[in-house]
Image (cartoon, rainbow, N blue to C red):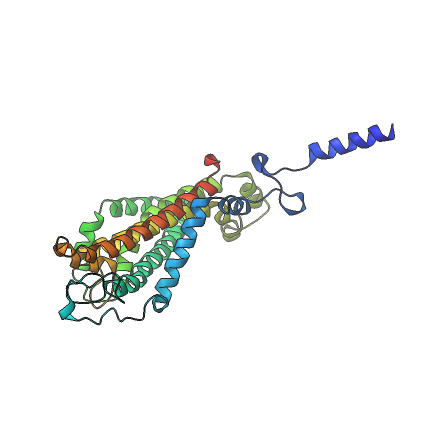
Length: 311
C-alpha cells in the first residue's frame, strides 16, 4: 500500500508540474519561460538565424575595422590601371578612376551599414514613442498622429529623396539618415500604436490601474514590455530595406556623395561600363545584396520566434 501511495503521489506531481506555454518545457525552477526566453531558445536552434547573425556580425566587424581585410587606401587611384581586371594584390580589379575595387567594396560597408543602423534606430525610437503615446492615451493626439502618418505614407520615397536631398550639400551620412527617419517612422508608429492598444486592454493592466498605478508606471512597467516585440520585428526587417534605399539614392546621385565610399556610389559609377568592365559592378552589388539579404533573413527569424501564431 505504501508503494501504491508513493506512485500515486508521483503521478499527481507530474500532472500538476508546470510545462510552460503550449507544451514548452519549463525554465529553471520549474517556472514557464517568458516570451523572450522562449524566443531565444527557438532562435538558437534556427539555422537561418545562426547563419544571418554570423554574417551580420562579420559585416559589422568589417564596417568598424576595414583594415582587418585590406590596408589599401580606397581613395588612392591610378589612371594608368583604369578598368583593369584582377591582379596580384588586387583581386577585384580596378574601376574607371583606377581605384582598387576590393578596397572600395570593403570600406563601403561602413557608410552603408551606418546609414541602415542609424536610420533604423532613429525611426524605431521616434515611431515607438509617438505611436505608443497615441495608442495609450488616445483622443485627439491619436487622431492627429494617424492623419499625419497618412500624409507621410502618401509621399513616394524615391521622389521625396530626389526633392529633399537634392538641396543638401553635405557629404556626410546624416542627411540621408534624417530623410529615411522622416519617412520611416510612420510605419513603426502604426505598429507600436496597435500593439499598445492591444496590450493596455489585458487584465493585468486593468488590475494594476485599479490598484492605483499611474499612467507612467503602467506604460513603462506593464504595457511597453509586452508591446515592443512587433516593433523589434518590423525594425529588424526595415534595416535591410534602409540599406537598399541608401544605395538607391546614392545611385541616383542624391544620397551619399564622394569622397564618401559607398556601394551605391560605386554601382552608379560602374553602371555605364557594365559591358567593358563588369567586375566594377559585380562586387559592390554582390556585397549590397548579401548584406540586405542577411538583415531580412534575421528579421524573418526574429518574427517567427516572437509571433505566437507562427509556432
